[in-house]
Image (cartoon, rainbow, N blue to C red):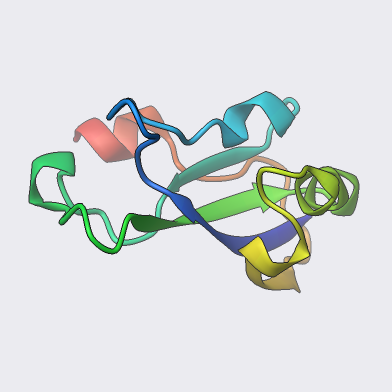
Length: 95
């Protein structure tokens, strides 16, 4: 299991949320906004956001190979030893 940060556009040209990292994620993999700022507080320029991602090397390779992201979108990755269930937990985020 890896912990990585991925940078991407926050909204697309129509103003809709453009982040779709979840389409890459498998069971027990997750992602969340790395800065934890409410969407209404994010400035539109620069139109970027950093996502914290917990995933396998295979999933990270798929993100890097996708033309919407690419290798440059992955800021860093590091192995996480002995991780079975990855954050974020809905109970933690809501509690």
